[in-house]
Image (cartoon, rainbow, N blue to C red; front, side, top):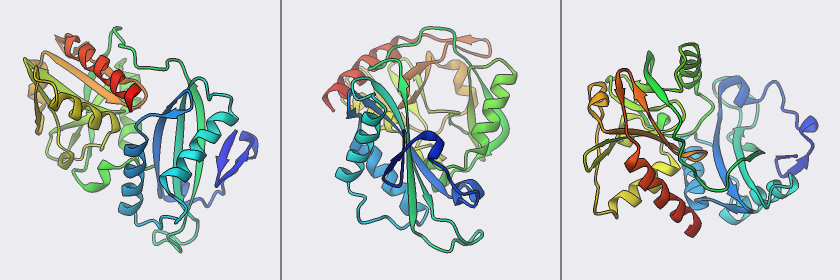
Length: 281
């Protein structure tokens, strides 16, 4: 079942026009949301990021789009798919109503919510081999548009194809200044001793939900020193650990980059703290 503009319909009946602006121009933003036993994880952060994304895209935010209304819509579509007592992944996409060419005929929006089941209710540490490489064919712009989740993800698509063709599990993206920005599907953290480093939003980093949670956790943990600063590709092989974060997997440790193998001690410690925060939040 799919929520199409507030109407619950069968998958086969959830049809979008070929003139849909999300399809035609990438004129769309989205959130990937984790729902556990009917409870939305980190809902407030998702809500405010979606509202910020819509404002950046100059979309007209409906007066009905209150946190309470959208929370109810998300929980409802999870229940309609019989996943209210399981782990679910909801994709909440907002697109501008069709009309116009590059210049839209309207700023009004419509939305669609889809849901799939996830295996685990809480985050588990993946200790299997996880090798990464740099993707250098195209760059991420260090501007505001790179910080939101929009349908304009060509670099991520091409990077994913590159990773698959070369047997990598993931790739790291660079911005036009040749600084490491993030992974194809999440934010990057680098560990050297007690220092944990992650690129700043100003480098073109996606304003990730789990990134935000970890920044708060690390700042409250005396064992670690947090630094938000640009990361050079030369720093990667000098690190003790590298890990990637996103809402689906939580924390994914990197086991190998080129000739360097990495530990996952800090990633494991932070993952346990993240699960505690998720339960309480």
